Length: 80
Image (cartoon, rainbow, N blue to C red; front, side, top):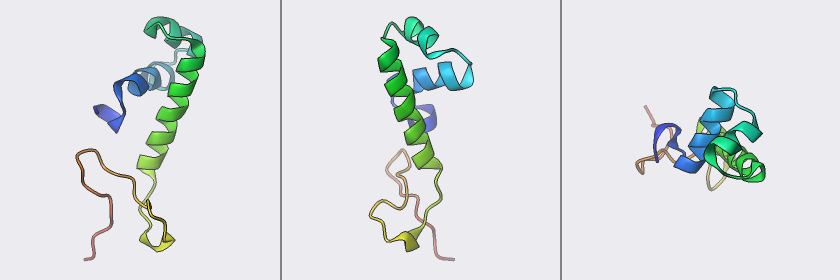
């Protein structure tokens, strides 16, 4: 894992398309992968980032109410 907490394959497509403004086709050519693979990786990267940015809600009664933080810590709220 690296910046953004994404696997390198996902991070590269995300940075090229979402940050640098390349099209899916351009990113695919740069990374030497198919446009379909680039599209799938970009969707997965966005989904993982979305999960990590969600606030923790322990009242939701969901098993995974908080996204894991890279490094093994949980994102649960502390009781102050």
